[in-house]
Image 1 (cartoon, rainbow, N blue to C red):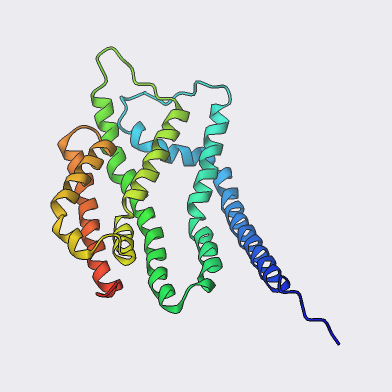
Image 2: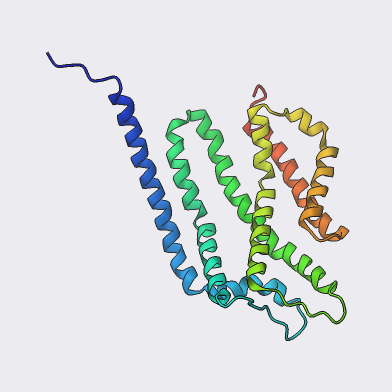
Length: 247
C-alpha cells in the first residue's frame, strides 16, 4: 500500500514555487533596469546637463557648476544614470510586483487595486515632472536672487544631484495624495464624511507641507499647495467611485 504524502510536502512545494516565481520576477525587473541603464550610461553627461538646466539658466552669465572631488565628474553622472534607469524602469518593476501578488487577491480586490496601482505610478511621474518644470525654476531663481553681493554661487554637482533627487521623490510622493485618500477610506481608518468635514485642517496641513518643500515666499508656496489640495479633492471624488458606501 502506497504511503500517504507527508502533510509538510504540499506547503513546502507551494513555498518553493512562490520563491521560484519571485526569483523570476526579480530577474525580469533587473533585466529591464539593465536594458534601460545602457543608453542612460552612454548619455550620462547629457542627462546631467539636462538635469542642471533649471539652475544653469538662472545663474549669472558665465557661471558654471563645480566638482570638488576628483572622481565627481565621472561618478555623479554615473549615479544619475543608474537612478534614471530605475526611475524609467519603475512601471516594469511595479508590474512584476503586481503580477506576483495579484493571484493571491480576490477578484473584487484586483478590480480595486489595479486602478490605484496604475494611478500611483502615473501620479508619481506627474509629481516629478511638476518638480522639474514648475518648482525648480522657482526655487533656483529665488536662491540665485538672494545671493549676497560679493558672493559667487558655485554649486557642487554632487550636492546638486542629491538635492534635486530628494525633491523629485518628495513631490512624487506628494502627488500620491489621491491614492492615499482612497486607501484611507477603503481601509476604514477615516470616513469619507470626516475627510470632507475637515477640509480646513487638511488645507492648513498642505500649506505647512508646501512651506517646507518650496522657498519661503507666498507665491511658490501657493503654487505648490493648490495642486496638492486639488489632488486631495480628486481623491475624495475617486473614493466615492471606487469605494462602496458600506466600506
